[in-house]
Length: 126
Image 1: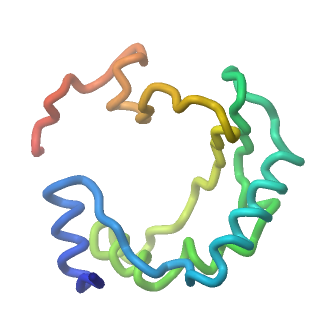
Image 2: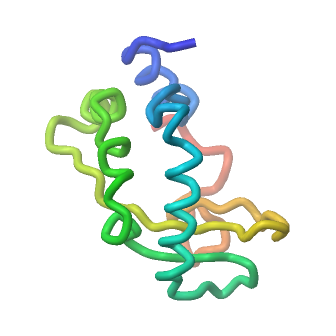
């Protein structure tokens, strides 16, 4: 079901996430997946975890995803939440290799309790 932008914004504000369907057209998914994985493997800088491919700033190596990252449906929601000067600024790829068990869930600061400082869960609304 395709939701109106206001509903996506509301979901992010109340639940912290949303799903925007159809950003990558169905017929392009397999080609993007294959090429993205090839580029990531070729430019992997290594990870501290076995079976994980890591490449920071993957957009520098695979620009075909840019049109999807900056899709007006995404940017409309981002701008509604953060203002008109919001930009995509982080495009690192962290890929579990086929057959690799998924690792522990990950979140960035300040929500990762493995860091030196963090916000204790449950997180306050404001």
